[in-house]
Image (cartoon, rainbow, N blue to C red):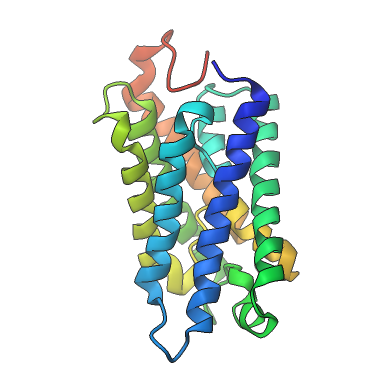
Length: 238
């Protein structure tokens, strides 16, 4: 059984990787602009691969959340208490912030400024309510996938949890990326926003993902996991 500090370090590192490679891919795409950039698919794959690898690496330690929206799903289903939830959020936001400031330090200023360091933002004239809805729906399916593959003991098998979770992020970015920036994760928005001091429509990336994660966790637990009450689930105790 891993201790709290070990779990928090895992959450820090996993979230760091998501922002460094995810937001970093946006900066790289800008740097290569006009010379065969990564494009939307490349950026979506960078995010998905980062999460898939980190879930595979650290899922057995902390549960592999790396996202306050996933953590709130664990909280609402009583797989994580309130204190640990706050600690997880703090570790995730710290990891995101550290990665964003490192990117800011190493990427040429004209490059990161052009894409606001990969900070998610709404497309021009795209309404906030629609942005929150799109972030909520895409995050809903992300967290649903987490519960189906990494939490449900009757799921496919946990060795492929990282693969499924990573692909769900890739899919979400392919759909929502051009419209909202597809954070699907408050930490993904927070770190770059803080480093780039760009807070436009920032609330969208908290309200939408947290709502989606909350509902997904509650729904999957109510429909499929209630009969498993009393058992230990994926790295967490009741």
